[in-house]
Amino acid sequence: MDRISLNTLGQHLQHLRTARGWSLSYLASEAGIAKSNLSRLEQGNGNPTLDTLWRLAVQLEVPFGTLVAPVTAPLDEEGVQVQLLDQGRDTPPVDAYWMRCAPWTERRAEAHTPGARENITVISGHLVVGPVDNMQIVSTGQSTSFAADQAHCYRTEESWATLLMTIVYSGGEEPHP
Picture 1 (cartoon, one colour):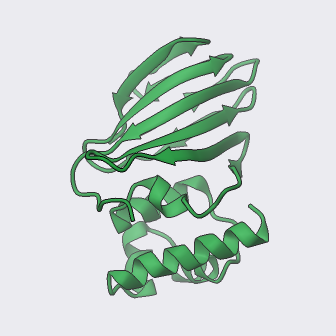
Picture 2 (cartoon, rainbow, N blue to C red):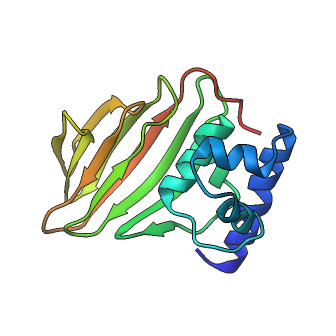
Picture 3 (cartoon, rainbow, N blue to C red):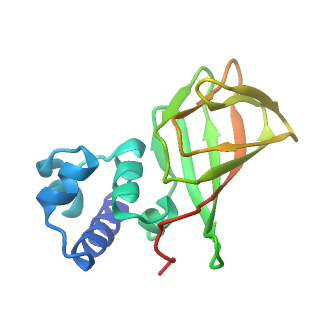
């Protein structure tokens, strides 16, 4: 993530935290990250992982897209690129993402907020995806849907996979700003 994106994300994260009246210590503890790491992130420093950003979004009770909306560049980590395309403004909230996974990549994702569902449509390549105990192969032009409020995984084999992902949130999330 470039410096401008980190600064923008940091300012937005700080705004979300302070709007709730939460201290750095409180959010860091609840999200399971070091206070110093959260402080650096809010100052526009550091290199947050996708998992760290997911944990922060869950603790802030906002869709992941709300947390990363100010960042226009793809988030890139260990062979996985993710970019927010759009956020629905209706109820339930729906976020749409473009995602690209390099060959021989496995990305384990923590559970999203209760009731969240992911819908995956593979644009190119194929992907093994789903809850870790019920993964399935999805190939070009195919789609799948699964409960994302449990640990899940994305895995490629010998080729790149490009996909569209929507996350439909249900429950305690705040409306989009």
